Structure formats: C-alpha cells, structure tokens
Length: 113
Length: 113
Image: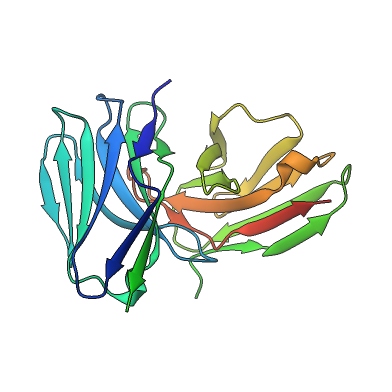
C-alpha cells in the first residue's frame, strides 16, 4: 500500500545549527504534504504544509522542500533551538480521498547544548 | 482555554473491561478524528466524523465505537479491552476543507493489564 516514510529515526544537532529532516513518500497523487511536531507528552502540532504544485515554502525559521521527481520531502529548521527538540512527522493527504491524513514514522530531533 | 481537550489523560484498566475516552473541541470545527499512536510513535487514523456523520472508518475492530452527540464532541468507547489496545489515543479536529491542518488533543495513555 501507499506509505510515507522517513530516512532517519534520530537526528542530533548542535544548538544554533541548521537541521534537515527528510521524508520519502510514495503516493504521487497526494495534494498536500505536511510537517507536524510532537513534543513529549503532547499531541502533534501542525508546523507547515506545501501543496503538491509547489517545490518550496518558507515559514518562521522553517522551510519545506518538495521534490516530486524523487518523491522526497524535507523540513529545514534554521538556528535550531532546544525548544525544537521533538519528534517530527511528515504526512500526506489526498483531499479527494476522504481527507485522510497519513503520517510517516517520525524522526526524533535532539538539540545538544 | 484548551482547543481540543480529551479525558482522561491516563487510563489503566484490566483486560476485558469497557472504557470510554471523551473529546471536546471549542474551535468551531466541523470535522473530528481519533488517531492511535503505538509504542513506536506510529500514528494511524481510526475514525473521522464530519458534523456528526461518520466519514472515515479504518480497519478497526468492532469493539471500538465512536459516538458524536454533536459536532463539538467525539467520544470513543472500547469494549472488551485487549492487551494490544494499549497505546496513546489522540483526538483531533479540523476546519472543513482543511484536512491537512489538524488540531490535536494532548492524548490519552491507555494501559491494558
């Protein structure tokens, strides 16, 4: 079946460095690709999304890149801070498919001081 | 004010028991969801309701029965609990037409002994 997967289960970065979290997807029909952040003991929180007809979108300290040729999605976090430590999930949705959001397996980001 | 609130936060029970988890959202959203997160952090949708109508019903045992008395509430009742039901259950909601942007509750940690 279709699935969304991540390359690395754990990523450690130094405070102040940039972080890049990668994701591979397989459903090329998805309309949106999304990144969620889940802090310990909390529910996932929406960070940023990108439509399938775009290749880059920027938010506050975050940038999402979409490469449809190789079905790859990445989340870049600039000047990583301790508060960025969390599990990050990529997700995809096919809006005509009942609006079912499908999550990837998650990457644990650890920020070292 | 909590946007999506679910109770209880922790639920410890014996196999074979019946239990319920309640969820309420004060965002005025039309769509609500239940997600299950396993020990490996994998998030999988169970159900979604749009204005009290069941929209998505994934392959979930009949022991799980969602109930939506109104569009602000979506409760989850589980009969005859099994060990494999142990997980964190998240309620979420979204605006109609914005299924990519979910607002999650803080989760209910269910432990079946």
